Image (cartoon, rainbow, N blue to C red; front, top):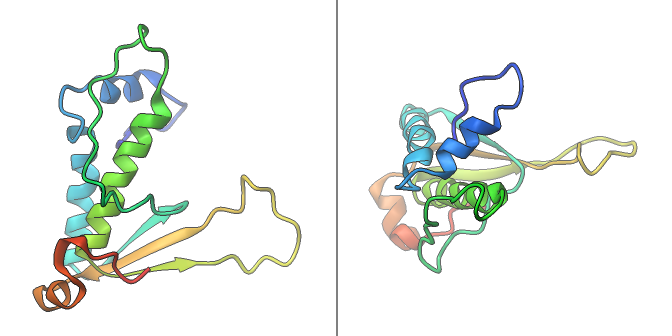
Length: 139
């Protein structure tokens, strides 16, 4: 995250633009909207890597990045957007599971990432059974 629509090579300027947004929720909105659309239609959302912590301490929204004054802080901003996605999926997905690798040989740490799959839309009955918005859904 955020959504980057250019894929030929890495565009740091697009990431910097998102980091400098005055509302740090905005860079996550297109992905959250698409995840909502897919889940409500019964589809699946795949997350490469672990789902970030649930953010139960309350949403920590960073101020706009001051580049170059504060240096390149992209991991902090990408972590923030990842927490937003994780929280969204935990609240709204009907189920969340992890796909594990079946590899039998050595795997590089860079290639041994988990894949999290969120499926379907959680209905109101599921929300009340699991404690509503603070649910740590089926992980």
